[in-house]
Length: 109
Length: 113
Image (cartoon, each protein chain N blue to C red):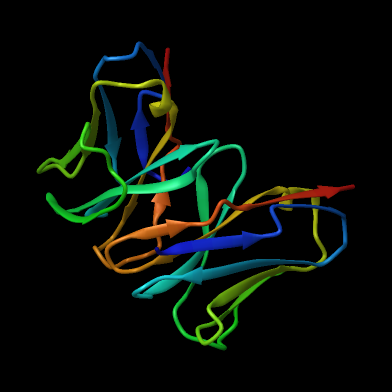
């Protein structure tokens, strides 16, 4: 059965901390892995990863994929209160999108 | 604002009823995706349409159906509603069938009583 597992489920940090969110997957046909940020409304796209070892970066956020070990990490450096959200990982198999349950990040001032 | 619009924002109905959720994709996007997000199951992919044709199918119940019209807007029909269908239903759009950068609409919150 195809599945995506995210850890931790929940994380509380202080402003300025660095966090690492994990996403592991088991799917029969991997096409890409996507990260989304969901605040109180709809998910917003962060990164799409298709190749191993190539880091995607956007400001304080970065992500990398390991297709051999079947996981991805999302790093957030110098966290801010505005980073508080649920971070979703999804895997596209070409004809399906599998989402993890998300990691809830709370950044305390 | 992603450019994807969904109506209605909220919907309250009774078990056994039928509802229709509507989605208008971003201008120029040909692909529409439907998702269901509930507290116990997270975000679940339901179905994708591309330029009017069904492109991919996820965990969509037989009581649910969707279509994409020539003007590219899409409707998700939910029938014989059950309490467990209460959820947030998102629509997303992308430029092509293979464009994985999807832009999500604000969602329709459905409550079945």
